Length: 356
Image 1 (cartoon, rainbow, N blue to C red):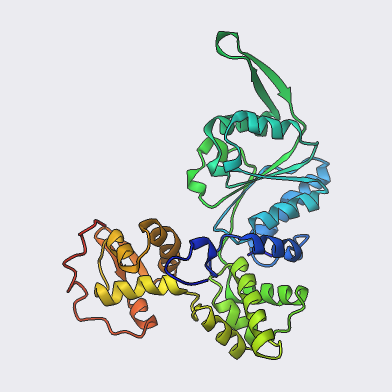
Image 2: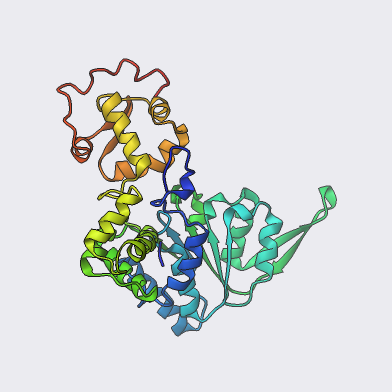
């Protein structure tokens, strides 16, 4: 709906990764809600978006352009499809990285039908020439197609039918203000509360014909990192375990045993997350320690630690980024059942060997 472990496992194959893999994409197509009433969570966004769409339908007009920002797996693609369904319009799906030239965008825009919804995922990764063309298309429903080169080049204006652009981004700060200002409605998708994830899990279990009790759903929800996509992925893995090792019913004990096999602990940390924390606590006495040093200690690339493991650890209050390097919090010591030393600065002679 809104939705793996050795040291050389690619980040995209982690069980708790919020980026969709091919299996997720196939399953999500069947689990996605079809309208706003079915969509779980994001209460403020749903309420505001419902007003925007109702007003557009009452006017007999296309809906305003919509910008959705937030972490992967929170439901941005699902909402784009719901917008199209609520407006009774077809939807065209593409992504920023796929649009490398203005001509790529012109070809898409010129083939849109009136009222069609264009979903542009990772819109912040679109090329600058295409981005500048999009300004005029969003505001005036017109693009200028350049024919020829050099002094003889001619701009031919091309009128576009009214359409709704739904842009999705995980990094709203990278969008230039002129583009961001052309969206009539912007919304930020928040991480889900455990109770909301329990509702997602029960709904998905019903659609997948999986038996699960309230305690089993709560156990999975608590390890899902506030992300429906991860909750659904964990549900499928626990379902496999329950079918092979038990009678098919997912209880709290079955869910805990299954996720222990997949090395996802009670707070949603996996092998990589715990390896980072253990290195920080056991080898560097809690820090501060440079990022490159920490990456070497866990046998991972610097980018993997910084972009894959750290965001969740920081959000959970287990790790802090400081000018001097990475530092473990008291919660990290407690989570791993370790006692912090009297002076966490002891034993850090190598902390700046590779820089912060």
